Amino acid sequence: MPDESVRRQAIEVLGKIGLDAKVAVPILTGTLKDGSQFVRRQAVGTLGTFGPDGVPGLIVALRDKEDAMRHEATLALARIGPKAHARHVRAH
Image (tube, rainbow, N blue to C red; front, side):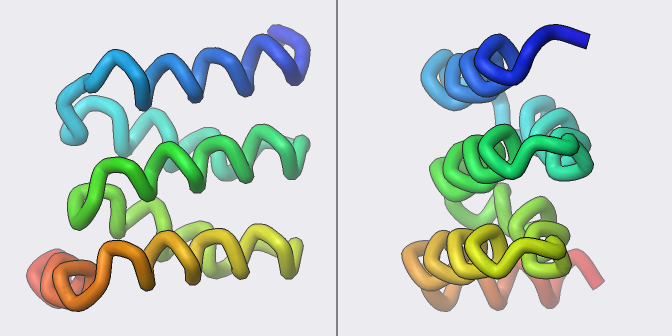
């Protein structure tokens, strides 16, 4: 497995290159299982850039063991606003 900084940079690039959220969100959601809270935090930040499409991953992040991670996910959902709720309801 690549070292932590490489994993974080890869996540950052996913957000910057503007991949279709349908492709990127499952990849980023998978990185929420990474052992590094810094990698997980980068994933949450990038998921937040996808707006409502990032909500499924952000919901997963709300169950993280780290308070800081749950806080970051909450902030990202708040920035998305009411559209986050609508996206979550449609998914279920």
